[in-house]
View 1: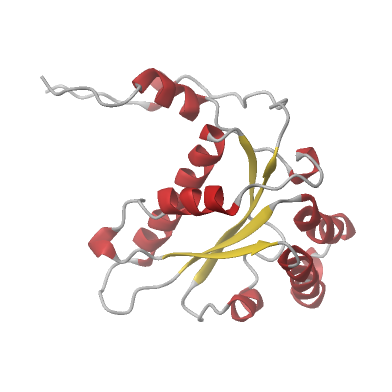
View 2: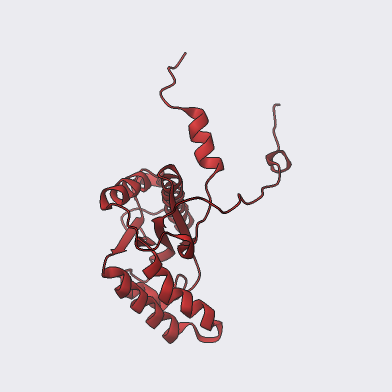
Length: 199
């Protein structure tokens, strides 16, 4: 019998209590230690990756960099959102970074040395994001992944040194919280989504 090295119940609890906490719910002015962010990113770096392409890329903004990021993303959105432009979204893009301790632009760097489907690189980056989410929960921090705003605007890539074949996957806002007030979002029973074949 394999020795159990980890607290499985605690692990299950972390997963089951993962949730999005929005920047306006963060404790104003309270910062996360950079070494905690580095550990969270190290956890993200352990995501599964086909042929070890490790496609995830992280652009981290903190300190004065938060104002810089707010300025950059409002500029991109104003220039390129077109018919999808919304004043409320622009307001959030301007204010959310300044409510946060750190902001991470998460990208997928397309592998050129091996021939694998793009979807596998996207899945790998998404797994890294889930590792970030679970780490944030374990540290009792607040985290929110935004995929709106500038995320899918092709013109945004060059602002963050991504190439044409790369993708921005999302913007992750992190901050400190006093209490987790958001209720857990509902899920339909897993049994309704499983077909279990035994023969």
